Structure formats: structure tokens, C-alpha cells
Length: 571
Ligand SMILES: Nc1ncnc2c1ncn2[C@@H]1O[C@H](COP(=O)(O)OP(=O)(O)OP(=O)(O)O)[C@@H](O)[C@H]1O
Image 1 (cartoon, rainbow, N blue to C red):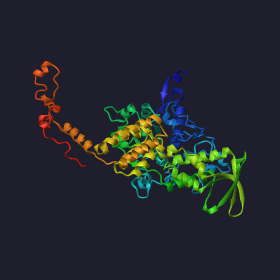
Image 2: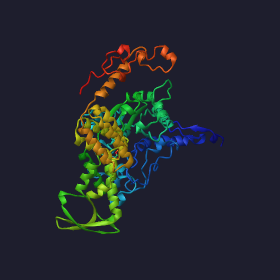
Image 3: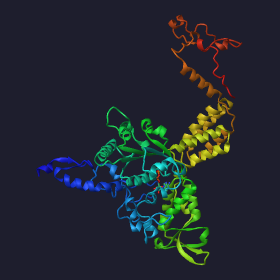
Image 4: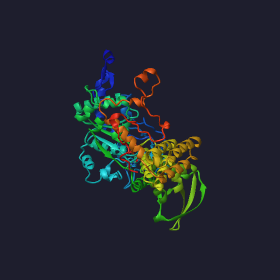
């Protein structure tokens, strides 16, 4: 009993245990070591962006034994997996007979209805590819003969920052790397910068050190949304005099870092960290890539595509309580529209498809479909309209918080400067339809009025301020036309950067000045007191209204006499 009182730390999992239990625990822990690599490779699932958050959330199915309960590092390993849930799929479970991928498609549960296949894990997570073979698009960085592909194929994983828009496959690529590194006996650990604490990173490092020391095993740490690390965490990532930081461990190879970010890493990721990582730029998925992903999804659900091959005509709809048991069809057009509308974001596309199918099944509406071969079938039909409803338009078009926000405002500014009224209206609509704050756009217009139109049409500034106030009074959607009017006015207006440039020259002059700044000439100074007058303040000043002729007088400091800040004038 006495021994049981002493707490001992397991060298593998760092868990504190009574000394009497350590040997049996260590046996289990070591046995679990191989299995753990498998478990830890499970996809870090994402929150669904659409309203269909599925039960079976993040903490389900996580390995309990050999893991300190408090460490979210490990709770993230298996999130989204509910052991008994239909449609469950993980890196470890891919061998199950019921879940074997069908050729060219995703995994299906044989014999299950479409509704059952949609239960549990969100479709996007369930269909996350495990291998590069199923990873669609991103040819520029992952095509044959690319550096990254050969590194991945040779299991030589460098520290990486994966930068790309939402849903383009950053986490998926990390997941594929996890699977492939598992084959090389590496560990793969996942942290989300939004929820992880500095201590979690510290834990990962000490475990990685143990793993390296005891098993010669390397650790790959995936940090999702790395740009969201807060200040104290960023400090921890920075090099310092102590070993209590992250970077030395990246450098000596104890930990390979893979970060994912939607934001430009040159602004958002600490420079010291960035210089030790290879930045991989992923792009929005093309429409063709999206179509391939959606086709794989409908196949995995057992939904049939109605297109040129099997022309049909549909007739009056009815309703049936058993609609979930009926065959489900989706129009080919619906899939291609979805592929277009999801704007290269596979998660949005798959969530949209999932919502459309679930909504149709829940509505219990059936359609009598007549095929060209002559047969008729009663089924559930998903049309273009249904998938459009399944999408949140605002999210599709525009990411207000992300880089797209800056890209679009820059495109609007440049289109107005280039006097292209069509492009100006287009970028304005892209922002407003995407949910941009109209006052943000209006503020930018106020700036544009002076920066680009300036004195070529001084009324532009009045227009911009009026547009700002108009937007403030009436808000969206009514104020969109106010902004549209102002944007077109600006696109058509004459342009002058005379003032903008001259002011820039003045600022440059001040910046370049060495030594003390020249004093204000005495004659320009005000002399409210006797003493100041005695000191010569205001002496010799010529009050212009008193003169009929132009007055000869210097206003610049002596050493700048004759300087023309407008000399680079272009207009
Ligand atoms: N290239 C791809 N090939 C096949 N499926 C993909 C691809 N990219 C994304 N997907 C699908 O979309 C889902 C979401 O992708 P993923 O989580 O990798 O996006 P992300 O770039 O990490 O997005 P976010 O920045 O929002 O976290 C995946 O679960 C997968 O089903």
C-alpha cells in the first residue's frame, strides 16, 4: 500500500500514476505505442461551417488509456469519430469490410440507406482522403515531379506552412502526410492554435523528446490555424536563451512542424518560425476538381446522378414517410452548380450537398421519375434549387475576415483608379453580396476621393462623405445603391494624385532630414505677449489682405527656400 502512495511519471505518456501500477501501465503503454501512431493519425476534423453540425462531436472516441486527460493534444486525435456511428471512417478503420472504398468513389456502408450514411460524422470529414491518390487538384504543388510530391513519397517531411483559402485541402494534406509518416513509424500530433495552450506545445515537445530517446521516433506536429496563436504562444515559439522554446526542437529534428493558415504567413506567422519552414501555397479548388470531389461524395452516399446518360422527366411530387428508404437522385446540373458556387471550398461544397440531401429526405417529398428507357421510379430528387438552398451564400462568395477581404477592396480601388466602371461595380457587389460592412467600403471611398481624384474633382470628397453618411442612415441592403452610385462616379471622375504625391514628398523631406528641424521663421510666428514681440516674433510679417499686389514673402524655413514639393506632378 505504501508504494501506491508514491506518484511516478510514465516516461512514454507522461501520466502521473501510483508507483505500484507503473509496470503494468508501462507494458500497456508500450504496446499501445504502435497503435497510438495510428490513432494519432486520424484526421483532425473541422467544425462544419453550415448549420448541420452533427452529433458525435470532437471528444468522442479519443484514446483514454495512456493519455493524460487534460491534454487537448490528444483529445484532438480522434475527434468526430463515434465508434459505433454509421459511416464511421478513420485512418485505422479503412480496412473494415463494410467501409472499403468502392472503386473511384468514397467509402460506403453497404446496405445502409442514404439517410443512415449521412448520420454521424459530417460528410466532408468522412470523405477526407487518406492518400495522395484521392487528393484532387493542387497540381502546381503536388503534381508529378514536384518537389513536395517527391519529398512526401520518400517520407522526407520538411517543416511546412500550408497556406491557402478555406476548404482547399490544407488539413487534408496534413492528414495524408500523417498516414504516410505512420508507415515510417513517425508520430503525428495535432494541435489547434485556437484552443491549444502553451503547455500543450510543451507537452508535445517533452513527449517528442521521450519518443526520440526511447524509440528513435520522430514527431510531426500539425498546428491548424497557426496564425491564431496568441502572443504568449508566439513568444514560446520564438528562439530564446532557454531551451524552453519550440524552435530548437524543430531545428534538431525532434519535431517537424506543419502549420496550416488561411492568412498570408509573411504577416501572420512569426518570421523566425517562417524562415525554418517551407511555405506551400495551395489554391482554391477548380470547378473540375470540385466536381470530382462531389461525384465521389454522391457515389459514397449511394445517390444516383441524373444526367445526359439517363435522361428523365419528372412529374408531380407527393409525400411519403418512407422517403429515406427510396432511391435518391441528384441532377447533374445541381452538382455542377454546386461545384461553381462553392468557390473552390470543398467543405462548403460537401456540406451544401449534405444539407440538400438531408433537407429533401426530411421533407419527405418524392418525385415520380420517368426514364427514357420507359421505366418510372418513385424517388427523392435533388435539383439545382435544392443545392442552392443548402449553401450559405455569404460564406461562399467572400470571407470577410480573411485575405479575400483585402484582395477585393484592392481590386475595387484599382478598378476605380483605372476608370473601369464595370469592374468597379463587380468588385463592389462581390463584397456587399458577401456580407461586407458597407461602412468599411464607404470609408475606403472617402480615402479614394482624396488619394486618386483629389483636386481634379474636389466634389468627389463630398460625394464620398455623403455616401458614408447615407450608408450610416439606412444600412444594407438599401445603401448598396448609394455605394454603387459613388463607385461609378469615382470610376468616371478625372483623376489627380497631385496633392497625394506632393504630400508624400513633404513627408519624405521630413523623414530624410538630418539634425534638428529648422525653426519656424520669426516673421511667421504669432506674438501674443510683449516678450515675444521683443524677441522678434512676427516682425516683418506682411499681412496679405493689406496689399493690392502679390506679396513677396517666404513661408518655408530658410534652408528649404524655393523647394517645390509638386515638381513631380503628373497631371
Ligand atoms: N484536394 C482535395 N481533394 C479531395 N477532397 C478534399 C480536398 N480538399 C478538401 N477536400 C475535402 O474538403 C474537406 C475540407 O478540407 P480541409 O479540412 O482539408 O480544408 P482546409 O484547407 O484545411 O480548410 P480550413 O482552412 O477551413 O481549415 C475535407 O474533409 C475533404 O473532404
